[in-house]
Length: 307
Image 1: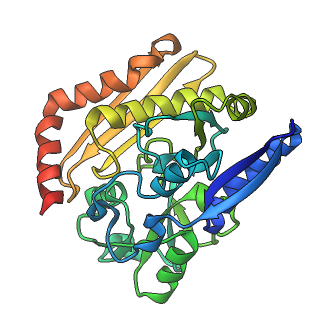
Image 2: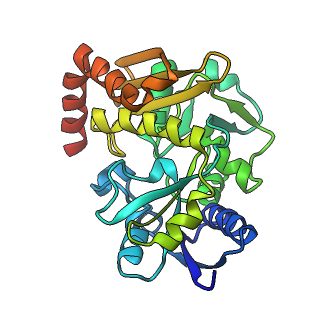
């Protein structure tokens, strides 16, 4: 094990935490590693909503290029940020055990605003649509930046609250006392999961990373991402999906949702499937959504985002 595995990561606190987690696990197996941090375009351009930047993979593109150019060997990502189609030559090498999948609302001590008017911040169309579906009297404003930046913006503005992924805040001990679990909000496909990618011809890195893979998380996130891919969501449409394995029943519980951007339209599916049917589960659930109004809704969403 003489080769050093160069781990590419974004340079935010959360991204570095994720990279160091992978580094420690590889070190524990006897591998030598080096962390190389880069700034992604998604971190640099903070004045536009993600969907206006016009490309999926805004947070992964810089690392993809670094891998293809041979500057890093592997890259660690929050899996929900990774496009469902990886660049040619790059493959999914490991999915780590999943953390908390929930979205949470961070507020400022009182939640009376839930029953009245309020301004809620989020940079996610999925969170925006689900929030407006439940609280149509509220206003939602855009919130961009890494976790620390978004938390600071919440403190600096007179917003009632902001929506975050629980896992990100928990990983870097930034989760405050004043939060609500949004157990009614369907998370982003693969939320709470970390993925490591490598070059498909790098057998040394692939062999090392295979030892970190969690099969249950791999299966559940594959189902969710297949649902997303079939709906043609990329990173833009308000799409949520969560798959959970029930060991006692040996089956998968799946819950998926597609909403209009304003939250007024909601197409939802909940199904239980035997575990041996998992490989096409996301596809079939997405097709059911598409066949019941999803095609027209997706066309309206795409038209709105082009304006």
